[in-house]
Amino acid sequence: MDISTIIGLAGCLGMVGLGIITGGTGLLTFVDIPSVLIVVLGSWFALFTFSSISTSLGVFGVLGLCFKVPNFNEKGLITKLMTMSEKARREGLLALEEELEDLEDEFMKKGLRLVVDGTDAEIVRTLMETELDQMQGRHAGNIGTVNMWGTLAPGLGMLGTVIGLIGMLKNLEDKSALGPNMAVALITTLYGSMMANLVMIPMAGKLKNVDASEAKVKEMEIEGVLSIQAGDNPRILAMKLLSYLDPKDRKAVEAEVLKD
Image (cartoon, rainbow, N blue to C red; front, side, top):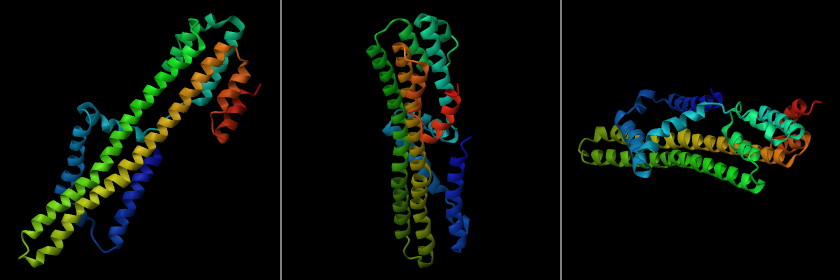
């Protein structure tokens, strides 16, 4: 569970609620079911026009990824590649074939399978980079859907406000109801702004960061596979891969994988 997402959402909503309470207005004043229907469900259904049915239905699963902590296990990856590099230098590339059966990382397995089969290095790089590009393309599509939902929500909020104002203007003779009706009309704008700025835009940003981290790991795997094919010394391979890590993470991992 990604605690930072929960802290962010709870903190934002908490500060808005605290601001409402300290401003002397009750929280129930800001609860309006029609506004929820217009902003939340209305903007979600608008996604069906923007994208496919499967993408629109799957957006909730995409948002759910923001509550999971991604673990790409860079240390384990570097250690595994070093071990395979040592074996390849000692016994030859064909000796890696028996290692592939127990390899859980499909991306690395495909690359090493090409290497074991004697595929040219440039072809290996091209095929692996193509798969990486396709992965990032899928991620970009999902992130774009979340961003679009965040774009649509304020627009539906304004639409709800206009609907409320029209109803209010049709009953101008009841002056005592003007203030309350105006307040209710503006709630949809509030909901749309909150949904976009407190939920969708931050979550899209988090998903983009996760995509960048996963892409970096895939790039490490490409470099590692090609380094094994080239017959690089395992320590040289490790140093290449460590260069992909942040300085803080690099020191911690370096102490483990290069301790001998």
